[in-house]
Image 1: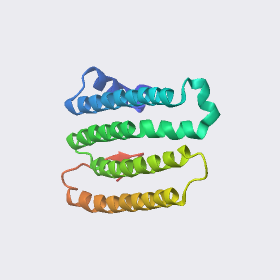
Image 2: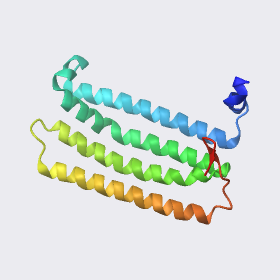
Image 3: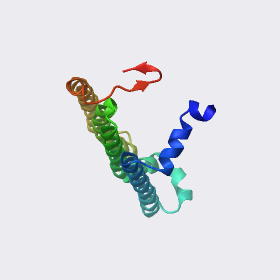
Image 4: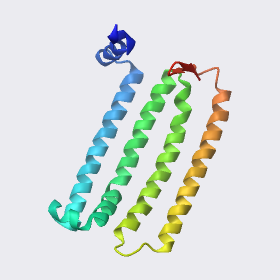
Length: 176
């Protein structure tokens, strides 16, 4: 009874006999995981080249965090977009209306990358951050939030046009 209540039997069956949409999602998740692993390796080697052994890293923690963000954020962004692309293909094949939210995820991922890079610049500077960097951070954040809201509004309008193609799904017992 517990197995059927949480759909564990269905999920176990999908792992044993995966459908093509599930294979796409599985390969996208595996590729994203590999790229995140590469990001961790790149971050570690970059920090080791700049700061030396890890026991030196705590002495300059803000600099270490800033450099870690700088080394890792691009690959993490790529991994997130690959994972979102795999989920989009899966949702397209299953005719799930939640497909439109993947576009919102991509837009949010891209501007969050820019916010992270600007924040890393602020952390790397040993003195107080120049007002130019703070203004850039505010501008990027404002534009990012605005573009995400615009994408949400466009997504809602586009999803109504294709309502007949995509099935409505139940989320937590409520219909969308």
